[in-house]
Length: 180
Image (cartoon, rainbow, N blue to C red; front, side, top):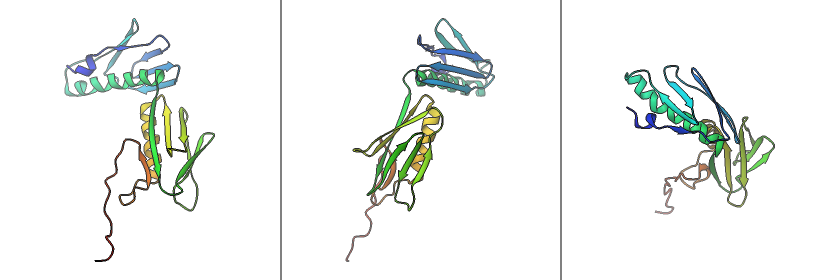
């Protein structure tokens, strides 16, 4: 049996969970998250705990067991503490500016790149560290937004200019040595 799938998820007092076949809705202080799940998996909510049960020991059921439990646990964590992803912007003149629900990025192009933030995602920009942080309740959506912003100007290996994740290290290349 899946070690992760067997674990019980504790539901905090401030969190409301509604379970329907194939759908779980979680609402808490940081927001609302809904997740479609496989109909085979049975999510049981009772006495402030959530358990994920699988119907049989088929390979597909075993695969989905731990995944379903992890998705529900991430939903609970997202509405209580939230998730955040930090991006470092490096390069001369490269910077970001937050205007309402949009991020205006200066990334060395001849124009300003405007990235609209989806519903449920917030952004903060630290000008001194040149670090952009996206945060929200849905872990999948935060990762998706961070990767889309990184794709606007991926880091290059010679000078390291571009947008990279804060924990990412860029393998640098030497480049030309000059006179031979």
